[in-house]
Image (tube, rainbow, N blue to C red; front, top):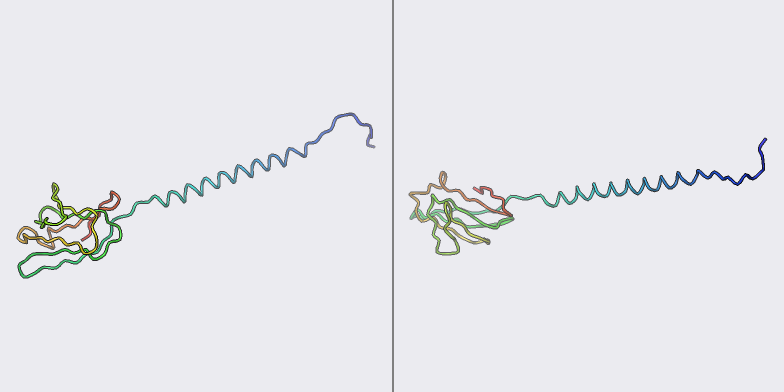
Length: 137
C-alpha cells in the first residue's frame, strides 16, 4: 500500500528528458546547416577555364588573320612569340608571347611573318580567365 504522507521530497525527473532532447535537436540543426552551407559555398568558388571562339583566315600574301568570334570567359588572349603578330592595335609584346587584354568579339590579330609561323605547328593561342590559362587551338 502506498503512503499518502507528504515527505517534502518531490522527484521530478521527467523535466530533464525534454531539455536534453531540445538541446540535441538544436545541435543537430546547427551542424546540418553548417555542412550544407560549406557544401554550397564550396561549389560557388570553383574556377573555370577560359572559352573563346575564333576564325583563322589566310590571304594570298600568306598573312594569317585570327578574329575572335565568340567569348564566354576570357580576360586575356595570348599568341606565342614564334609568330610575328602585327601589334599596331591593342596587342602588346611580352617576353615569349603577344597579349591582348580585355578582348572583345571582332578583335583581330594578323600574323605578318608566315615563314616563321606554320599555322598547324607553331601557332599557339592561349586564353586567360581568372588566372587560369588554357590553350584554345
